[in-house]
Length: 354
Image (cartoon, rainbow, N blue to C red; front, side, top):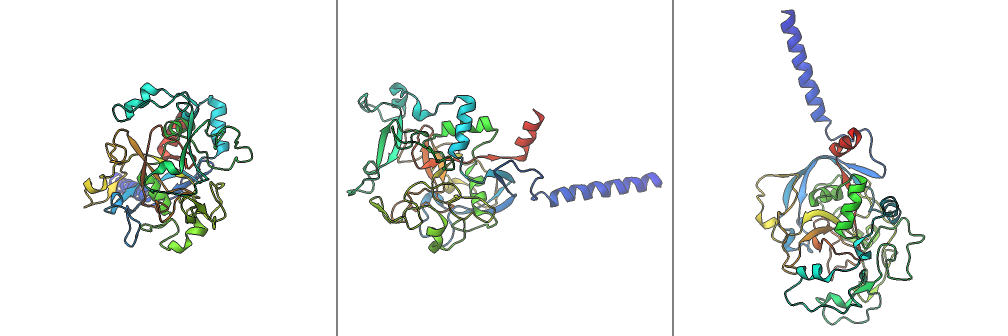
């Protein structure tokens, strides 16, 4: 009888322990990595929300998603953080490397003529601040310039510098560069689902990181005010990229999830993905489409970028919304794209054991 009672007590204690673990699974782990915020496990509405007048077809239908808890950077990776990575590893970004035309033309339509050698030089895309007139809003080349010599250290080309801008988000980094940083830091890029979970904060179905009130945009995020791309009235205090933490955080302490710079994710960009998924029950830790597809760029694989940037305006991309999603190629870089990283408790355990 004693042994039987002990067995019952043991089973009850075990069940209590398991229940307690499950009950507390959303609690913040004891030690958070420096500069990171815990995003608890939760189920939320991913995709276009009811009442979002800017929502695009590729954001529909909205669907329930469950994402396990993880840590995410409080801000976008800064120039200071990226410089530490470069100093320790000697890494050279894609924008600093010579261009291989034979490799590049594989991602272009057949018989694309080779540009002049003066153009095929290391560089990156820079927003043209001197646009006076726009003929066709579908012609992006009117406000984008390929700037030879532009890279993360020289964001506007030769002669420019990031001196005094340690706390600005690093830009002119491609997905390839961001993944190299992640490998060094034992981090990963967020999936789109992780990114949206973090952006929602304690909310579950809001359009913006601060709620559903579009009138709060100018005081909540660094975006474009005025006539895009001719004049930015800078009502939010910034004409172009802003230092991190220049605007209020969301409900769990994350800064600049909307505006400032686009943020890279690990998911393929596929405009048809949402239309092809089963929305009858919540998707658990989804990692996106199996293949990339964009009718605007059928020759390259594209990955999802989130959050919009300082260039976002209601008349143009209106991507200052949680559900907004656009694509960028693996090797693309510009002065309005950066990234932040995530890490799971399991990743931290593996690091500790190694």
